[in-house]
Image (cartoon, rainbow, N blue to C red; front, side):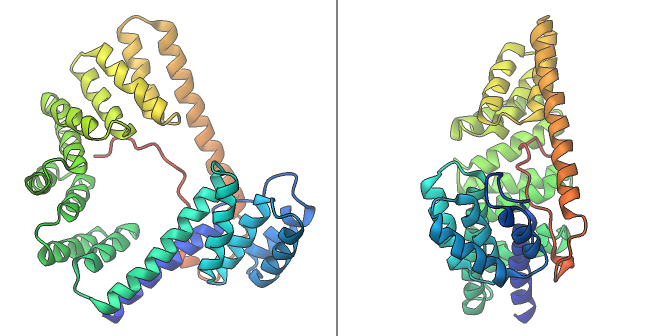
Length: 332
């Protein structure tokens, strides 16, 4: 029990460490101390001073979202998750499309949910949700053996959880064990016939084992269940292209990039598809877009490395790079 609690606590701190390092200085236009001194103080661990400065500032400038986000980051570092949630909620209410606000609000919500899970660990240590949480924690640490062990424990506790079966299927698919993955997805479908994750998983397995007709069948069903899934549209477009159904493939891939404009793999497949139809101009346009996205990804990575240089955390072993909104490309 104590070891499991430590795993959950460690996951909370992983989220917190990522949250502290995720964004760089605030937007231009904020006061000089906000852009330089306060951000430097945050990285040096002087969270109380940062919180005090930004709290005074937002009293005078209540609509400065950048300052509120900095205040929220300082509050998070102090363990004041509810205070951070309050500040970030105000940001999102006033600016529903504020990317930093949405990102940090999501991170804070995750932290609060982890605290609730800690209560669950204390109250019901053998509940299948506890094993599932621990499995996800091990996955975050790339310890797949331990993750599988906990997922199996969760399944033993609740053999009728299609969600856990999907998780096991995903785990096996990541390890290129497609037959094993398919068995878990099949079991999930017997429990929940309209399970999108299982349909998508079976389609992806079939695609990677070159069973294209089977892949198309399952991926079409996945798209029917979730038409807004860019990942399913991408995979279906890939399968259709392999089956020489090029116009249909283009339709799916165009929907995929409309749903997620930064999906590099979709543009790469579009370039091939247009090339097959002899539409050289559209093929080159898609290829140029793919290269542009690749360049942007490299530039973001370099900025992240530059930002991290010289930064020292209290617990560096818990640092985890922040999510960079990767394209939901087809995974094995």
